[in-house]
Length: 183
Image (cartoon, rainbow, N blue to C red; front, side):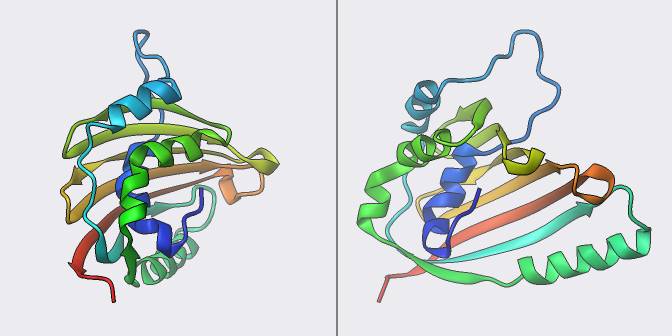
């Protein structure tokens, strides 16, 4: 999944909607349909329009199958890239599209919602996506949202034959906070 800076304002609280990693489903668990997820997304409180600052903190980064020194360098590089915050404007029309639109767009790909539990201010979700060249991703997300701030923990596992060791695991904290009005 790719999100531009302009979509990040809606995306991260919405991605919270759309994303989460899969493992350990019980026999009673079954993937939720897009309609079920969109209905549950309606319970989520929408963010206020305005200017937001988004920041990402890498909590964990692992690449099995490469030397520890090289893995540490990659983690440092990822932390440096991720730690750069950026600002974006969330327009009223973006807010009106709401989380339901994000779910709809996410469902257009080869993704399934393994779990999606949301309330006005919390989300606990899991999503699995199949991508080109044999790559598969699972994204687990949980966090809290308010009309002016969201804090999400995203746990991402990517697997692909071309990756060293066949997999990459990354856990990050994504924070979006309203800092004023758009100019």
